[in-house]
Amino acid sequence: MLPGRPAWLTPSVARTEILSGLVVAIALIPEAISFSIIAGVDPSVGLFASFTMAVVIAVAGGRPAMISAATGAIALVVAPLAREHGFGYLIATVILGGLIQILLGALGVAKLMRFVPRSVMVGFVNALAILIFMAQVPELIDVSWIVYPLVGGALALMVFLPRLTKVVPAPLISIAALTALTIGAHLAVPTVGDRGVLPSALPVPGLPDVPFTLDTLTLIAPYALGFALVGLMESLMTAKLVDDITDTHSSKTRESIGQGIANIVTGFFGGMGGCAMIGQTMINVKNGARTRLSTFTAGVMLMVLCIVFGPWVSQIPMAALVAVMILVSFGTFDWHSVAPATLRRMPAGEITVMVVTVAVVVATHNLAIGVVVGSLTGLVIFARRVAHVADVSSCLDPDGHQVVYAVTGELFFASTNDLVSRFDYAADPGDVVIDLTDAHIWDASSVAALDAIEAKYAARGKTVRIIGLNQASARMHGALSGELSGSH
Image (cartoon, rainbow, N blue to C red; front, top):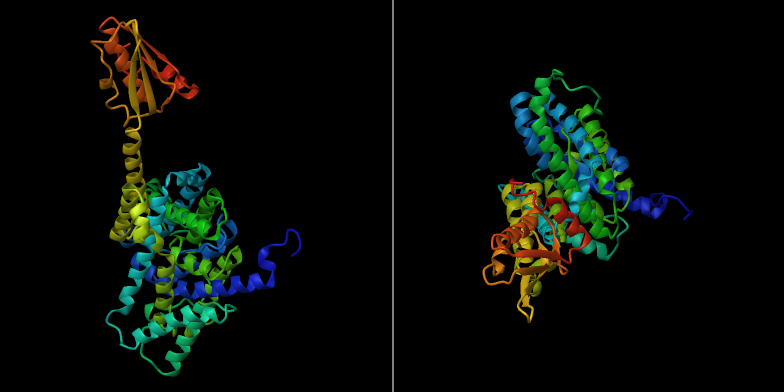
């Protein structure tokens, strides 16, 4: 390969990327239609959003091979607005939400990802797998008995075919085989066309049909903020997941800004907005896609399939797509994390965080809420654990004129709650030294505790010297000591 030549220009890579993108495009169609129904808009709105999101994010995004399109989380955020105020307000919300995402990206919100514990990430992945599987269950209820062997056959094909050849993605062969079988045998099973009518023309750009007033801005702003936060949370978590799977790094700041750009473009083209699609991203990555070409192909082929091949695509049996998503859910779940041997070695706090994340996500069907609650739970458990690390020991001079208290550990709001009670104010001699060589002051609560200790000794006519402060601790103590009681 020539120096500087993009990887996707290599024929073998391009074939993998294009075929994987085609599989993703097929899988996007029924989901985009379903999310349109959730949002209370025409199916074409979700399909247009998936088209524009994928094409724009392929260029503007920070994570190659990640798929962005219309999603259920975004649909739930905008549904009340669309239902109560109309389609024009939904489009205005998508555009404003995109602007907020660009602003948040520029402000460095992506750096907050460093505060997401690994146990939350594991819980996120497992909850994602459960949600993907649960989303397929309705497709298997109250259907003809023939659906079940079709799903089983498709699963078997996708499991065993890669052992023979990987030239063409097994999901694509499975979809084609089941479609040919159902059409040839005239089997009456649910199809993609049962979800809604596919669009027959490309979307046309335009402005949202709303009054451009302060009242409109006040109405849509809360929805746009929720839209922006949910979209970024899901996109950044998905990007981090793909980073781990592919063992590569991506720019989360660029991804944040790219999501905003994609949503603005989507809004102007009449789409319902979106974010990273975890299920379709997993299909793409598991099929070997690693570049932006697969994402771009997925978006373009989505429209080609709808507009050019609509009548044929409409006949694809849902059983084929259900089988693809079931296999994705099993492949996504981190089975090692729930193995008995792993659970026996894992600290109870880590298991708790993982379980809380999974439970909240499954209960709310919102990955963003689960990640926030899981992260907060992890922080609380961490704070409780670190709080017990701080310790105080004393050493009285032989002559009895001075006592030295050695304080060790991290001093912050949780660890300094009982710090004041660890000193013997009445019995100690007049010269008290507090040695913080092996401690670190993190917050105002620690400074306030030290002030309280000094005040208690001073009330008994005794002096206190604080020594051993490192540079950061000395700076915080110097700035805040004596300024926190409100009485100078």
